[in-house]
Image (tube, rainbow, N blue to C red):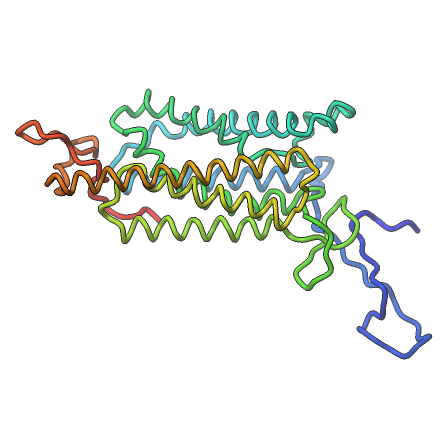
Length: 319
């Protein structure tokens, strides 16, 4: 009987050893199921994982907005548009980056349930959509402040999405390996590096760092959180592609590495500029936070002095 994809039959004994010539049974390692049936309906676990991830992001962002004094009745409509544009952008960029494959098999372009969503494509389409709709439907929420609030949400959701998305899709593993942490994936022969799990760990680590910054760096300038997210996540994406996947002969991987390094450098530059401006204000005697207006942003002083660039007093991290 032919072996199913992803089944491993390592050389050796089922119990780890035995005398020469002894009979042994092959060890079968089953991949994680990528689909199942509910009656006649075929359900893909990858799709369920994405749905749960989007729901988690929606609820967490709503909570952080409430914790910081912003109204949230506009979030549902905005969120639906962000989900749609994120998926479209993620798929479009993935297909373009791997056009040599999809041009030969155009029927696979729309088969999103098999995986193949570019994180950078999702951000490229989804973030501008969210910013535009937030400005229209919640004008009291400054754009940069909104990006600061949503950045930890994106990192937490990215970690959840890695575990419930690529970890449950066809060919979701990385390069072949044989160490204890390697796993079997559907559509791939042999054990593979569990890249989605490592990506989730990276994302949760970044999420924790962002919450620590929010809690202990209260006098940070507005925009510092999103800049830190850019730097940390960009570096993580570069290292994940270069260390765990090692597909440097693949155009998509090379593009991700380049985009990751660019995002890392941009984040560092923005953090440095924000900190420098803050220190200049402090040297000029403008260190005291200006009174927060009704919109949560610093208001002008009575004498017409320029408002502080520091974030308004927070009610909590919203974690």
